[in-house]
Image 1 (tube, rainbow, N blue to C red):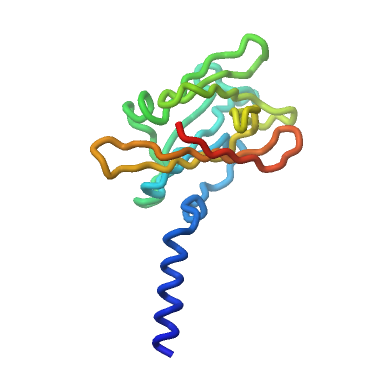
Image 2 (image 1 turned 120 degrees about the vertical axis):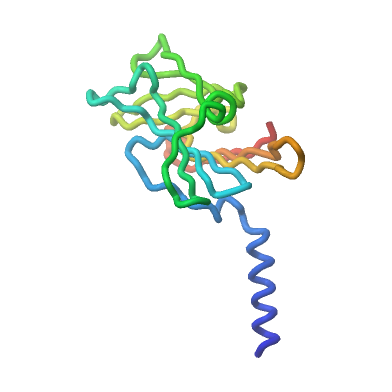
Length: 177
């Protein structure tokens, strides 16, 4: 019996080591203003991107997106980004789209190659449209696999999870930046 339990325990540990790291991370609570969130392989802390919606149900033109931490590896508290995090790592640049009212084009300051659009959908819900597999899709979450064993953190790969804006089906892309 002891040998059997040891084998089961060994296989359980082994399977957990190779399980999808995204599935082991906590999911932030739902919010009607949630655009998407980013998690990385090094810890459970999550960067959340919420729409900054005004009382008149439009996006705030000065700052259409509010970005903050949920510090799951501490006490699960909500915390604002530091200036360095906002300007170098997780911050966004946004600018009003001239072709569409109450819509903003932007990019991540740390990765400017893919531009996205933040706007309200036909039902008035905030969405972030991001290039996934070459098409603008509704971005829901991002997972970043990082290597922190060297002096400078490097990105192994990025996974994008979203929804097709026409069909509502799940979409996924994994790429190396």
